[in-house]
Length: 424
Ligand code: GDP
Ligand code: IMO
Ligand code: MG
Image (cartoon, rainbow, N blue to C red; front, side, top):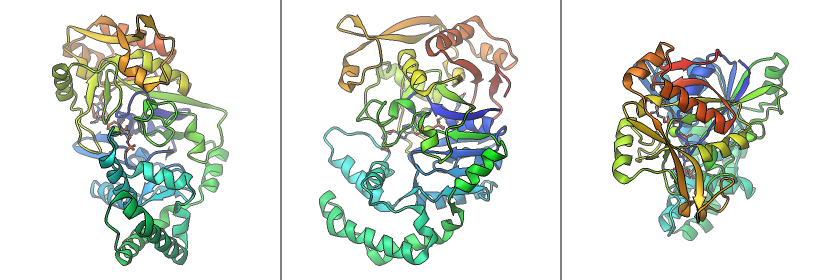
């Protein structure tokens, strides 16, 4: 397989974890390059269900698994996650944390929560501390995992960090001050468990490239949650788009790579923000139940809607998407017809591109094309390589809009529920 950047094409939860797990059997290294523990990537292997928040999914295939520099590393969650995968019989021995990554502390989560509570127009964050951690990074007051390599220096830095929190931030956000002695002690315990994984990945990166190893960049969230290109301000605080994979990982721009977009056969969104193809409340509930659309991170109900090819076309363009994997096609089975959004109309006029003005998205009217549905039997046949006409048409229309080729169809949550259209 080629070096591949795998990204979510919608508002997250497209099934990236499942797809990266399948793809990573064919690569040497997997790198998570942005975001943090706001992600929830589900992998089902036999009877085991593993949900990864920070660990690259390749860890379940024993691949070199790198947490890149633009990930904000929640050290509390990471230790828990390592314990969780060990309980499932997997190992963390191939884990590497880029020493240039920033640490997300429990105080970032406290601030995220407090800010969200105070907001009149809620963003619906995952309360994982993502915004506050990136604010510290870009405000140049963050602490990096590199600091964990020097015990004394780390202790001094977290001491100063918590002093600042207690002196200014706690009052500003109206939250309780933190017990400094306990905080420093707790962070040092986490440091002692994690520092062995931390290193300057430039040497590993060079080695991977010199030896012609295959790298998979695992994106979190989705294009429409990108800080610049998503539905701002209802976005996350990092760049989720494929071009950022290199910046967020410390791998130079490669001469040969492909971008694989993960596209759910319908659309879901968790948290606040515009959602043009959202179904009516009743239909939404039906699809949510069928698709088990509840957040892998927070358990919140995900809103559901029809496939939005107008937004997907925008996502495909931004990412330079070469290939697509369409997931959850099984969930749409047994509907007489399915709808697909092919354009947005505002005041009677068709928009030429996905609007930057987020308020506009609340006013647009989606233009729908109604297509024939498929049955459960058609999904069974699909697994045998027999494609129903309605499924072929759905694929064709998606490829026409995105200019990307559908390489696989995912027909269930498990590792084995995959139909290869193209060999990997
Ligand atoms: P991610 O954040 O993109 O990795 O996606 P999540 O793990 O948050 O959500 C995707 C959900 O759909 C998980 O519960 C997966 O187990 C499940 N899933 C993935 N692909 C398929 C599929 O093709 N069919 C069905 N029925 N479930 C799927
Ligand atoms: P994966 O990788 C779906 C959403 C939140 C909220 C917004 C901002 O599993 O696809 P944040 O906590 O990042 O400040 O929240 O982004 N969000 C996700 N939605 N899947 C995710 O990750 C998400 N990560 C963040 O719901 O609307
Ligand atoms: Mg998820």
